[in-house]
Amino acid sequence: MKIKIELFGAARDFSKQDYLELTVPEPTSIKEVRENLMDFIQAKYPENKNYLEIVKRSAFANEHNEIVQDHYQISANSKLCIIPPVGGG
Amino acid sequence: MFHGKVIDASKQSISLDEAKKFITSEQCGASLFFIGTVRNHNNNKKVTGITYDSHDAIVEKSFKEIYEEAIHKLTIDHPSVYIEHAKGYLGLGGISIIIAVAAKHRSQVYELSRYIIEEIKKRTPIWKKEHYNDHQSDWLKGNPVHDLSK
Image (cartoon, rainbow over all chains, first blue to last red; front, side):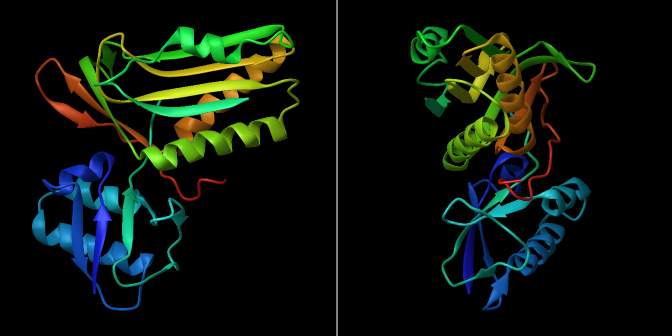
């Protein structure tokens, strides 16, 4: 199934668009989404270790604006946001 | 009383007057205004401006949660809080955040204001991209968020 991940902060550099579309097995979890995203980044930006570090240190939020944990299950057409490490003020 | 909002810097500026109007109350003997601004250096680099990115819905939810948590944890009489954070590009001196608080006593406003800014820095989804005088730009490293309610 396809899922859409909206990009924020440092993760915006992963694409010229403000989201990424990934194809993942159904059902899947946040843990698997993170692994899938890391594979995608490694294939697209093999030289950029910093991007992998950003994915490792990021949280994910669902369409209800809740931070979701690794075990959270994703269904088809789920919308996720990647929340890289924050630092406002 | 609470107000929390993300302000698009390309359309609007953060207003100290609006904040003051909102928190002013005859029940409160103390008001405190914390203002964050863009400074001209960071990590030995000359900064020319900052672009702020924000997940607006989660930011505004997080402001509310932090406010509720603060008044639950701290002892504050008649709290009134006004928080705004800018998103988009700000040049040097631009106001990125205002936290205006009013309460009965001065110790309460210092404590409340400090609690709010420290929690925002830890967990509110706002990001900074610094721009330097050599025309390079960098996202700042930040703090990982695992659960907004903790």
